[in-house]
Amino acid sequence: MLLTFLLLGATGTVSITEVMANPRGPTGAHQPEDRNEFVELYNYGPEPVDLFAWTIDDGDAIDYIAAWTDSSLLQDNPTLRINETWLGPGAYAVVLDPEYADTAALGGFVRPYRFPDSTLILTVRNTTIGNGLAGNDPLVLISSSAYGFADTSTFGTPLDLTDGFPTDAGDGVS
Image 1 (cartoon, rainbow, N blue to C red):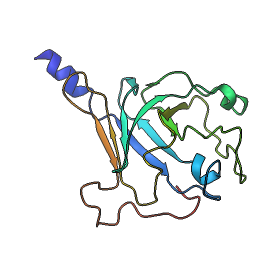
Image 2: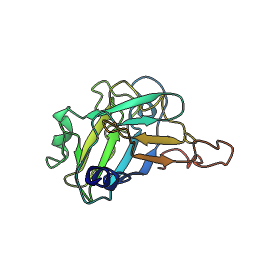
Image 3: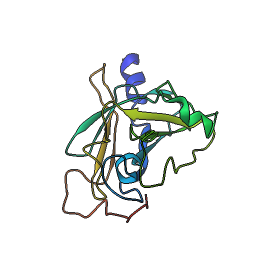
Image 4: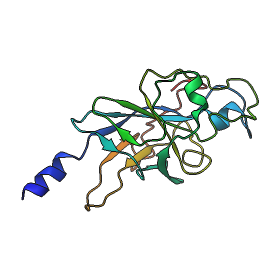
C-alpha cells in the first residue's frame, strides 16, 4: 500500500510550458525552420524527475527524449546543464531540435535563444521533434513507465483536432 502511494505521488509533475513550432526564418535543410524548434518543460513537483526515455508525440511521430551532448552551447552559457536527463523540482528543461547547433547552418538565426542559468538542455534521438512541429500540432509528453503508470502532459487537445487549440501563433512566436 505504501509503494502505491509513493508511485501515485510521483505522477503528474512535469508539464509542457512553451512550444516553438514555427521558428523565424527560411525552411529547408540547415535552415532556421529546420533547426530551431523547441519544447519547454517544467517540473512543478517536489522531487527530481528523470526524463530519459520519456516521449514527445505530435500525432505524426513519437520521439524519445535524450540528453543534449554538444558542449558548444556552453560557450553561450557555461551554467547550462547538458549530458544528463534529471530535471530538478521547480526547474525548467528545453528539448531542442537535434540540429540546433548545426555547424552548416544557413539562413541566419543561428542559436538564437538565450537560456537562463542552470537550464537543463535535452534533445530527441532522431533529426526532428515529431515529424517537424507545425503551429497547430498538439503535443503529448509521456513518461517512461517501469511501474505500469504514465505521467503525461499535453499541449493542445490531441483527442479533438477540430477545437483549434493550439493555434499557429505565427512565424517566430512560441
